[in-house]
Image (cartoon, rainbow, N blue to C red):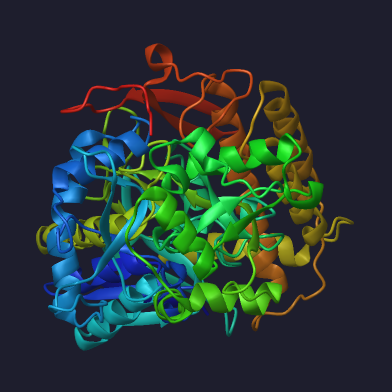
Length: 591
């Protein structure tokens, strides 16, 4: 029998954005969180290097500088009013986290410590500025733990290891979700006044990715299937420093502490590309520079990787060359970058204190997603029409503060600022709204039917084979470099994979902990999102931020200073809306 639950405010996803929203909503309304993981295993926990806020604890800084860097880093596709909100409110959000008990690193005089990160500058000198607040290289983990403990203290109800498979939308209003309890296979219908989606990214479309196994785009796909659009799906970030072949991230914090990229000739090659910021240039630029080095034969040993060098004696040599008086030793790195150093030792068998580390760009972060306004309310179309009762925050949402390329540390800023705004907006809405009637039996039946179609299908295609082919295709044709011909090829192949997906067969027909079934269901979501991504990328005949078209290498503000909105109704339909520009006119991006 399906189970039925009712809450004022419902949050799907227990990462930083979801927990921040739940914490603030729960202060005034009955709130529950649904997560397909145990909450403290959420992907926010992998964010290593820091959360930016212009505290100015170690050198002069201003939130306006942070906003300028964010807009420039996003290649002027950011909505500037949203960026101003994020950078201004980041200061209070970090102090709020501190007061909740987050154990930030400290300066000798007791202030929150800050370090440099890619693309963060002093707007007057143009040199890197220390803006990233950090707790060693476990900042995301500490945010997650702190928020979870405060949610427990605030009596938030948690449904752990429940996977949401549908969003209940009727007459343009959201009334809850349908989920499956993984331990039993039972269907649960959650009825709510307001629902906030905070399920993170969907990088598992690609083969080499920093994303966890669970980041499969379940909710963006569910929203798309309910007739709502997704925004800016062509913009996906490739982080320059993934562990070679594995994609596991080595945070930009390493470069913030002085590490540099080295090619097969031993050259610090970023000096040639970005003479001012060098290795601390934004991620899209660093990723393309690495691929250029590899394409031109300067990958290590002729292979498709370069080195990240953070041996202490080498860092001190680079500091001296840059005129930086700072000097470090092995103990300093072990203290500041414990997880990064351990990752290299565990996953590559390399001691970064003694040897350079092989790295390559890795699919990392979705700049696009579910469109929202500045209070996390989901948009139904390009005119800004609201879907009543539906909210989204964090990586799954597109507000848009990251534009075409996200700066390092701004993901944590995004999720705490807009998670909080979303939670407060939901609570305000819930205090005024009533529960709308739903047909819970029909909702449960429709949810169960989705899974039964896969469970009982008797085709000859294996989901893992389709998944591998999709991921290889996305790496090859929808990766750091793209062309029109390659994207057309990708779309044709995705359609072929979708046709084969209808003929899949799984071995486990049971209900309890059926990961065979749920991974097959997730594959359908990933294929839908891959299709939208390739379509939006083909239509954008320019290069901007994380979207680089080799056949259209220039940014085209005349025709493409706008956000894409994609619907899937049998085929993909694209519409566009203008970028909101308030203070900073678009300009050529130089570092």
